[in-house]
Length: 128
Image (cartoon, rainbow, N blue to C red; front, side, top):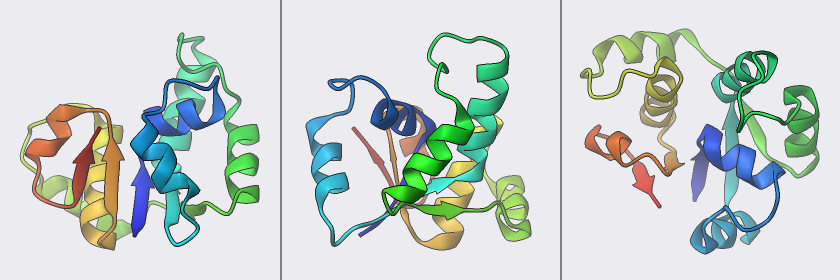
C-alpha cells in the first residue's frame, strides 16, 4: 500500500504515544507499505507553529528530517496537484486538506486521515 498521512497523523507520529489509532500504527509498522508525507503538511505545520497554535508544537524542519530518516517519502506539490484542487467540489474549506485530497487522487495513493468530512470526496481516502 502507498499511503499519504494527513497533517494530524504526522503530528501524532512525532508526538507523545497514544493519539495515533492502532490501525494506523499497524500500517506504519508494515515494511511493505510506502509512507508519504506532503510538503503541504510541512507548510501548514510551519505556519501554525510560527503562530504558536496548540497542536503545532513540533518544529517542521526536525519533523521532516525524522520522517526522511524513517524512510517516509516526501511528496512535493506539483502543478497537476494544484490544477486538481480546482476541480474538487467545495466540501472542505481548508486549502491544505484540499491539496492532500488532490495529491492522493493524482498520485493514486490512499490518504489516511481523521477528518470524516474528507471521506465525502471521490478518491482513495480512508478515515480512522
